[in-house]
Image: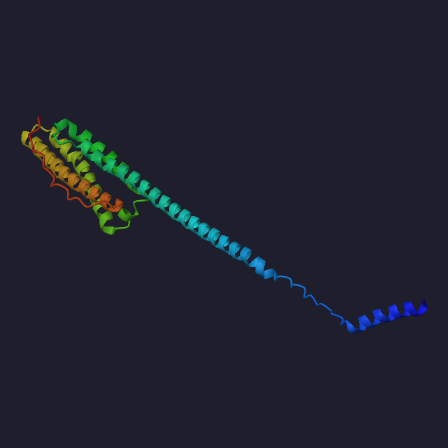
Length: 228
């Protein structure tokens, strides 16, 4: 019995000795690189940031352009307003001295209105800061000053003591001389007024960017004798 058991053990030992030990080495998969799965996210983020930055830059540029346009339009509107008021002030001289020749008794009344109108024109001209193109030119200032001085001379001459004395005299020729002189002053002033307002209208169009339009030649009103 003992010999039988020993033979069995010897058999298994012999089998184990004959069977080579096979060791299977299984290689563990290496972990994936973090950059491999993070790269698409990074690229997408960069693209998104670039798109956002571009959009912001466009929005900022558009905002600045709109603000500049709005500012330029505001200045243009202010210019239009000031030019309109200035032209109204000059047009008042046409209302004071109409086309129809007035009677003798109206001259002094109109002369007083001319003095008031010239004061208003000076005030309007001085309170129009956006008309810098007009104010910055010496030639323009000289032309405006010349018109103002002529208005003052006409008014002063009409209201002069010399005219009043002659009109109160009994000498009809002296009265007629005063009438003729006043009519001449009136006619000359009317022509200068039309020339001046046409020039001012041309300056308005130029400053506001409109095309130049050649004004028509001024018409001289026909004279008629005034009644004593």
